[in-house]
Image (cartoon, rainbow, N blue to C red):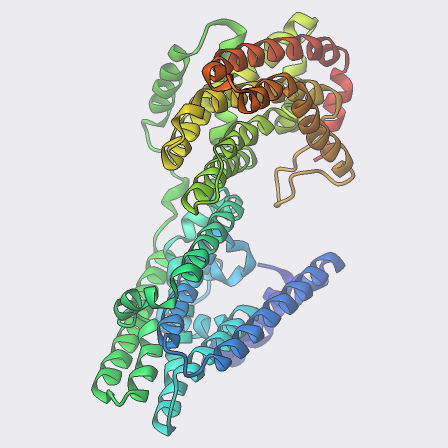
Length: 546
């Protein structure tokens, strides 16, 4: 707990000993917020900027909902919007656990606190911040847009309060149930992947909005008829029911929301009791861990080639699985490489050539190969004494990437082809993907030796301070160079599309692209190996700055 937090507890605990602890915890939350903003001007500026953006968005949504009063499908929009808002409250603690230190109740385990008073205090503290204000503004727009008549407005006040409390209690219950996970390495891995979830969610929202734009809001009504009975959307549904004169239905929906709130608070209290009375089993290692690790290692080793190449491949694949930053980069590349071609194909605006995104996104992982090692690169450097050693090191890393990329790029291309029904172009696009992948492996190996940079292990930054320019040069320059290196195969593809007899020979692009990609990869590794062996001290210095 921070110094500000300890001060808040120490200065108020005597008065709170015989009374409610709610004011103490609320002041604790405010002290933590104040202390966090005082740490640095950058953090304060980021907080203010995010607050302004969030509130402007919330106010715009509030005004938009009010302007839509009387629309035929406004009830469906508000009910579903409330459900999406509650879903956001449920998942945010999983991906941004460090945003609120009071989300971790184990920090209070040494204090003589009872579960029920603690639940009330933490619930009140949860109502302080940008998130609750943002939620209040959105819920206000939802209830005003469907409220018609004095009775509906009276119910709207109760519905807004119930919906807000359900959202907050849901977030707290989820956070408490996953406290041990969120403070572990797997929890940090989950937080690193938050950007991926946001990217996928944005694509899904974009896809849904395009579908609604073409077919109208009426498609929401069947789903809304079900969701209006799911808390906290049922609270907004109660306001709409009162406006329609269905008072019995409104009472049932409000009762359902209140019951859900009571259930969440009960579950939260039980989880707090378990957290504050039982040991943390996540730090206890099972007896068979070593044996299980040996069996996994043996299984992976048997599938890889022998010698240095297999060792380097195994190390690289383990980085992908265990290192949070490397895992996040790989998962993001895998997701975007699939989302871009598939979603465009589903929307009817796609092109089969978008399937090259799969090879391109994973090819980026070849750039800055030594940055993921950070200061531990010195152990790798000790094993490199000749250009031959450097070549074997780079080749092993490239092969580890190919183990995943080749089948994945092929799968994405086949799926995109099936969605578009353009099977005659499948060999051509596969050839382009393989040549692009080979070019990116070649340029990635060279830029890894020439423009290495450090990847900080803590925080969300992927580049150490002062090395952003190196990162841009390595990635942007490498991608442009890869496109130029792929130009012979691209020229053949253009000829196949414009020539009268091109369709007859377009299948040759598959073997030609694969052979060209393999050749350019070999050449790139051979060129990068001497530079890597000659620049080991400089590489170690660059990758150790994080």
